[in-house]
Image (cartoon, rainbow, N blue to C red; front, side):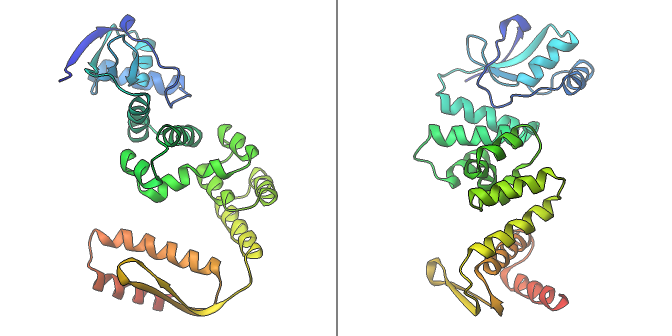
Length: 263
C-alpha cells in the first residue's frame, strides 16, 4: 500500500498533459502562504520517477514561497493514462475549480480514452450529476468560434450549453449576442426562441409520456409545444431532486400542486 513520504522539491516533475492549464501567481502565492503557516494539509501524488499525478498547484505554490520539500504519496502500481487523467480531473474539479474550457477538455479526453463509456459512466467516476456532465461536454456540439470564446473566458459552459442545441448559423448569431454583452438569461431565451422556430408547430393540450417500469407522466396545459414539454420536465426534475433529500413522493406531489396554484 502507498504511504506518505517527504521528498525535496527537486524530486518532482510536472505533467504537461494534466487538465489544469492556467495558474495565477496571486492564487499560488496565497496557497503557498497558507502552506507555510498551516503546513501542507494534503499530500501531492506522484509516480516513482517524480512525475506529479495530482497536486501541481501545491507544488508550484511551494516553489514560489521557497518551501524545501513536500509530502507525497508515491503510486505503488502502474496507472493507465486514463486512470491518471481521471485522478487529475477529479482532484481539480473538487479542490480548486478548473475553467470551463479545462473541464470540457478533460471530460472529452476521458470519453475518448474510454469509448465504451456512456455519459452516466463519466458522471459516476467524477462523482457528478449526469446533467452536469452533459453541460460540461456541450462545447463539443458547438462551432469552433464558441470553443475559442470559451477558451478565452468570454463565454461560460452554460452559454455553450444553450448554443449547443442550435444549428450552426443560429449558434453564430447567439455568440454575437453574447459578445455584445447579453446576460445568460437573455442567451437562454434567445436559444429557446430559435428552437421553437425550428421545431414543427404542433401543440397539444395533453401530453402522455410512457416511462420505464410501466409508469407514465402526463402534462396538461394550453397549447403545449415540444419546447414547453422540455422546460416543464426539466423544472420538475430539478424540484424533485431538491425534494428527494427531505420528502416522500406524496409530500412532493402536494408541494408541486401548491406551487402551481401560487403561480
